[in-house]
Image 1 (tube, rainbow, N blue to C red):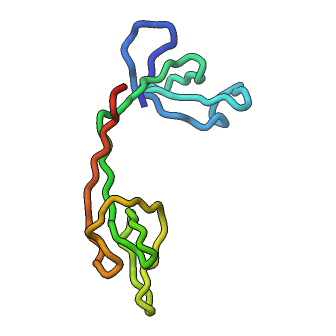
Image 2: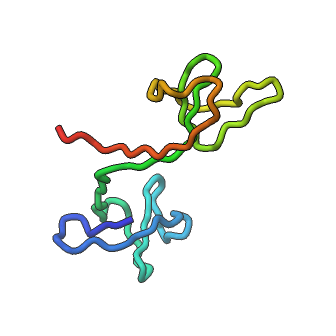
Image 3: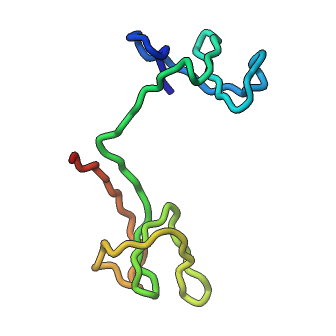
Length: 116
């Protein structure tokens, strides 16, 4: 992640969280970060760069279950010995062309935030 020293106009630099046990005279419940040169900072010394992506892409398997609910799944669902899909995850009414008899179809979905 990127951070800069709080209250400065300096450039952001890479930091990585380090275990507080490794920090001499660490304070309980405070997070510590190190830069590439090994300099340790506590979280109060740093201002972290915020990142807001313009779009998010998710990939998954889409199918309609026996209860007529549509679902998007990270892993390809499997069919049990009785012919029922082994399903987990959220369901959405997005794909009316997919029926309980349809094999899972792979989709890529891009989500773009709406500016208000």
